[in-house]
Every structure is written in C-alpha cells, then in structure tokens.
Length: 104
Image (tube, rainbow, N blue to C red; front, top):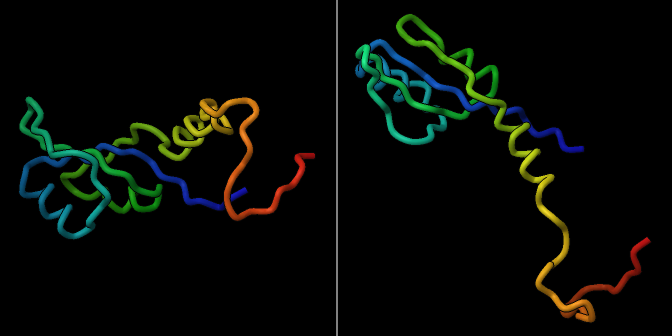
C-alpha cells in the first residue's frame, strides 16, 4: 500500500477580494477554478490541500471549509476502472519487448 498524502478539497472564503489575493500570493495553494463573489460580498475559491495546509490557510477574515476528502474520492474512482483491454479480441497475442509469464 502506498503512503500517499491525504488531500482535501476545500473552499477558502475571504471577507474581501484583497484578503483572498494576499492569501493566494502568500500561501500559493493548489487552486481549482476561479474566485467567486458571494451575495454577501465575500470571495471564495476551491483549493486542494493536505489537512495541515488547509489548517494553515485559516486566519482572520478567512474561513476554510472542507468539501470532500479528495484522496478517498480518487481511490473510489480508481476502483471503478477495469483491468485489461476490453476492446481486444479474446485470442489476441501480446506484442512487444517483455517476458511472457503465466498468471497464477
């Protein structure tokens, strides 16, 4: 099993545009999409961060809300993917530079 770090998809909401810009310049989180302005005048953007990085984004005038555990979602999607080539004919012979081994 791999020891990949946990990633969260979070929404970073700032009280105003300048606070959000300053945060993005300083912390440089991995953002997804563009900032949006809420009806209440706040500005928010979605970002991907580890739990520690997400916690470090919070400060006065900034709220960080976890949307989902992106690592768990990714693993669930990977489990949906089948193995092999479903378009290959049943009698297809593998080609290329490799050793032929029997499946156990």
